[in-house]
Length: 304
Ligand code: 13P
Ligand code: SF4
Image 1: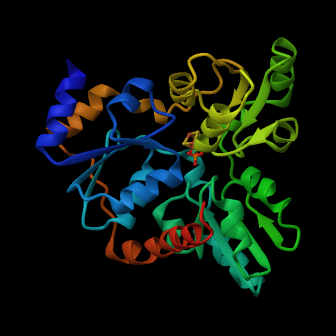
Image 2: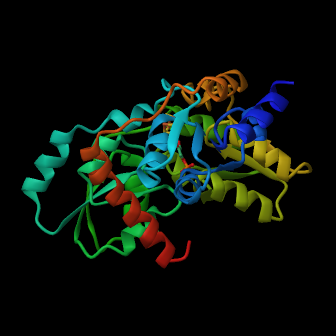
């Protein structure tokens, strides 16, 4: 009933619903587009609907607004925010800019619009390696995710990385000892991890990739059992696409409380009474869209 009402209203009011793989399966089911943060940014930039309803966290809605400024962008829950996005201070960026020449400030898309406005280019977990490889600068200040930064830096030894100490609390809670226990329990399963996991977990993983890349890998693989180290929302798409394969987690810890604030109820409420609109100042709009657009342009050229 609620799903039918959502479908009817979004059509009537010219809304497109974009959802991240970490929101509840029932919300993914009513969305028009579901994906990782790179796919969602690209889709937001291209949509023709007058209104975008974002089922995800705030930085994703902000990116949609920056990339498609003429559209109205609403959050299903405006308090759904990624804590990592707030771990960088503008002073951190200014300090490093003063210290280094030949520097690119590379900003993970999980960051505020204010931080993007001070950055040179954005990356997501699926395009970070290719975007970074395309940069001519020798010194890279990678903000805010230290784990993703270290993971990609190992594959680009020719660059000098300066890391920030930001992290995702959800991925950090997947400790290596839990991974080892899961591997003992399911010895014939292979480990697929998100690059926001800590270095020791990534080292014992068989494949590292964004949410979409993990889903693609599992679908194409001939193997039938996987241990998944990212937020539990991905299990919805994994199981939908691969009903005969088995997916295991380490349990309750793989849970992003902010993504889980999105519900069918607040999606419906937003459609009925659109209130949680993303509003950014003209100054931020002008500056913060540049690194995002550069990312889309670069990622397109290197054909991801
Ligand atoms: P993806 O880019 O893989 O969708 O990841 C987004 C995110 O928030 C991971 O925690
Ligand atoms: Fe942020 Fe981590 Fe939640 Fe992703 S899973 S939105 S990085 S807190």
